[in-house]
Length: 187
Image (cartoon, rainbow, N blue to C red; front, side, top):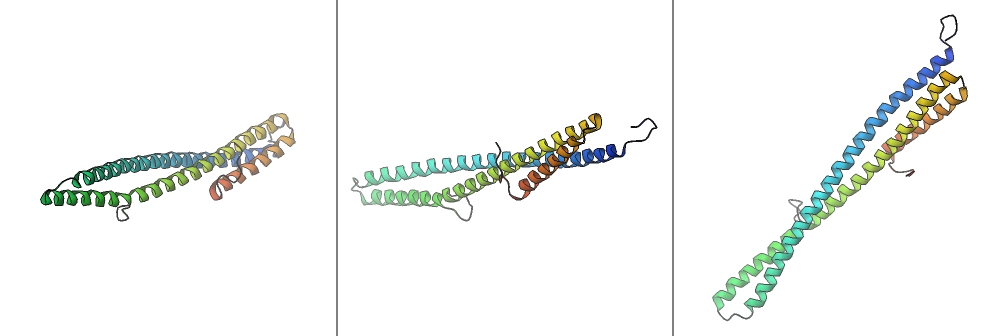
């Protein structure tokens, strides 16, 4: 402000730069939190699917072992009726074990669970990359706001140019987060 109650026109421009960067900071922070939440949700989904996969595998192994054990026992039995009953049970267990391997109609066979878990892991990884890109954008906007504010106090116009450059960097990382997460990996 000058001594006559007028605002220095360059301060108005700096205030506008600060306001625009604050707007983009809010957007980057919101998008970053959303990406972080997505990453956590996909991580839980993947963990649940892998736990279900493990449970299916254990059940499948148990049923196959029981079928193999009963096959050995059956082969030592001479009673035809008992042998037929054992064969029927062995066939049922083996059919169940095979059904647990792949169940396309329910998407709950081991193959389908594995594919779903891997898909959730990929989505988690992309969301984490997106989150990091938005975090870098937020940092660039925050530092830019500080430097632009320092321009008003110090009058050092070079700080506003650096602030503007950081604003562009922030916009770049927002674009990367939206379009190509993880394109630039800083940490």
